[in-house]
Length: 81
Length: 139
Image (cartoon, rainbow over all chains, first blue to last red; front, side):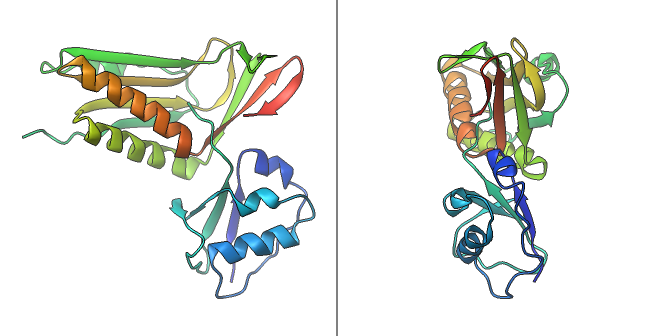
């Protein structure tokens, strides 16, 4: 299935040179996606294992099942205000 | 019965201006109008700071800030609240955050404002990168 991956904060810089897969297995949880991306990355992507994740702009836990077309955002510790 | 008023929440590239919020939120039943501006400071953790670049997850930032505001308003029974967060490159002295809370009495206003600022720093998807003479630093 296709997923729209978004990386924010320092992740957008740290992972700028990785070419992510074009498609992903049909049955995938957020946790499984984290592991898959950390393995696939050509840079140090260990932060993806622990950062917050939002699916379609709602926070998600690792058990959440992903679906075709989902937007999955990886959010490092925030620093607004 | 307390009327349920939604928080006024804006994430913008424009300079922070809370004057409309003060005018609109200071209803006759409010004896306290609290205003807060978060300003870019010239130092952080021993480093000189010249500017901060604020970026955000645009599709989610206002939504999450609204949810944080609603929780703070509900906890302290606050009816009138507005918050503005600016994104983009800000220089020292410019405001990144504007908050107005209007309440009948001051205690719940101060507590609500404190909670909103503390909680937004945990979940609202906004990030800052500091620029200074010694280089750049993600916060």
